[in-house]
Image (tube, rainbow, N blue to C red):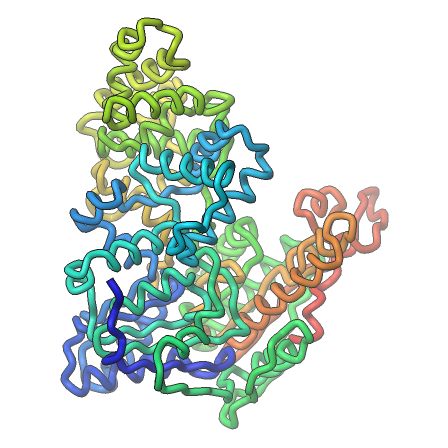
Length: 633
């Protein structure tokens, strides 16, 4: 089905960081509502879940001032929109998938299942990246996009493994949603909105961009900055979409904003970064009404001192009348985020950290080193004993190859007998596979997965009727074999809520918190990774850990690890990242760094090491400020 876009009024708003693109979208929504449009007919797409929170707060404030109600305006991410489309009963039948994305630890099992292809791990990972990027760019529109032989065979294996567990990998979601809508006119009508607005258009994938276009029936407005193309949530953001939008919508209105409304320090830093040869030149200048002031630089002798210095600065700002929610602390990694939150709370400043992308880690081959993931998988089984993805993972824990060969044989059996994974596991449990083949050893690993399935059924029965902490602790006890064991802290953090702690509710909650992380407090300092500043509008922005080794990374300074051509690409990427942060501070920009650390700690943190000296019998090394500090300080 070819969409008719001739009747859609299209608008593109482009401009540098801090130039008011998001404000323009907010004003347009308020104008629509003031003109009598129903709020339910308006869809706003933002690049990240946290950006959705920020947009909603700003929209509600503007709507209240304009005397309209924006409560029913849909503000969401393209990923969430794609999963909503794929949850249609017809979409499930069409795709053979459930609208369930793989979490990070579940992708480890998929990778093991892909290794049965015989490809070397490095080659396999590169091929998977090729498939994923191609999916986001709708390369499969061309029936000949894959080379016959190895490439086509591995792609088929990937699709078969995903079909076995009825699950979806993130780069595939937008692709499936677009292709489903293209082939089902009724689905387009069921999910369409009269007015669609997209913020940070350059930070979402091509599939997400096309999905947004399919949603609109009257107006489609996008806003973006091609110099701030940084991956923040969608895999493979598609900056070329800004220009392709104009090509696709003949006569579209094109609005260019050039005045940056960030504070003087942020505007100056962004302008200096735009002058970098690696950056694309755009119209950009500081607005006349910006807040004056220099960049504040906090220098601390040690990393632990830096956390305290940032906390004291934030506490002083709050005491001076700044709303904690108007303060954002950008951090280089999850360790920095957790320590920063501890320091802020110790200073009596409310703070929350945006969940790290993959906080559930561990070696799935060693049961003692993957307890959090194991407990979450068990919770999925208790919530839904027919969950094929959870069963696949459950049957792989503790095995060096995650029982990938056994699952490959089980998949072949399921395909041959037109059965699903759960049905095949039941057959493996009761020995039907051996009977069907006439040889107990023919289906390699059938006994292992059958025993795992039986153990899973016993766990489900043992946990029946339990909820909340009692359920999580029971699962931890059953998995570890230790009487009185308690669930790991990360599991409780992800699963428990103030209401409804049933197995099903907790399973849905932890997946949302893992795959769509957001800070739900409107009165706390937001501690977020560097790239997650995208879409936020802080009055005070504190960029912490601003040292070489964090940005740029340590490998950047070693030509043996990173060749010159890759160094240039790394520099360009980091310049975009710093630029995208710098212009976000509307009142004050703060740079925080530490100057020394022990040699041992520097090695663990992979810092770029300067001079090494002996201090009180301990080897200490100097840590240099980020190469980008000259543009900001």
